[in-house]
Length: 153
Image (cartoon, rainbow, N blue to C red; front, side, top):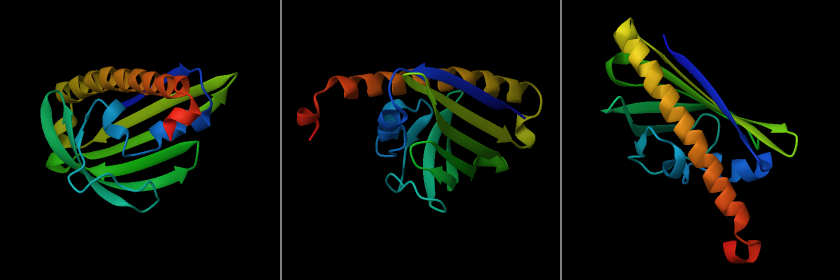
């Protein structure tokens, strides 16, 4: 079953990256597969359950997620179940690197429908979406860092 791990250097502190990446109200701004939170954005706390509408390979679906791990300023992990019993996992991890942060995203999928060519296609589409998501996250952090603090309040 596909597991995708992608990473990108972001020339800002983990705290600056977390301010956007760890805020589910900002998730729609950067996560490429995200379509909506039907019940509103969840609180980033272990044990929180929430629904998310996603699109992968142009196919919409809904995932029931549980936040399984939160390490402030560093990492969050979620596990979920989507259509046709597919199990999903996602992680955002931020690691200090020199003067910036290595942002890494992991996405995993398992379940019968993903055996064979369908799994390969989902894996490739997820690689592309994850790369685009990290690029968008980096751009948002850079935009935020460019705005003087007095203008952010």
